[in-house]
Length: 141
Image (cartoon, rainbow, N blue to C red):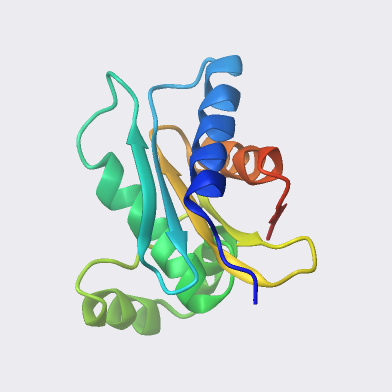
């Protein structure tokens, strides 16, 4: 069974931040979680506003917990808002179904965790997460 290493988590953050800087996005917060939703690594860029950790972690936690990108979860939440409001409440605020997190998959497709970002638009956050995952030689899902 493959598992996400600390070195891979750090590479994901470095790759995501490199993409954010190349695109001149606002300062970001990036959270990498393992397959059990445990924090593996986090970085908050200088100048990032408050709540970046909570939002990035909430996006990633929802993605890994539900086995889908936060973009998919955001759409599902629009289609079934009562369920997702209840789920967020049941998760003590750790679940945030908003675009900006992707699954981290091994090259063979095994779920290793998720990465979430906060600081830009949902599309920007998602873009840098996927770039970070790919920079570590893994697949974004």
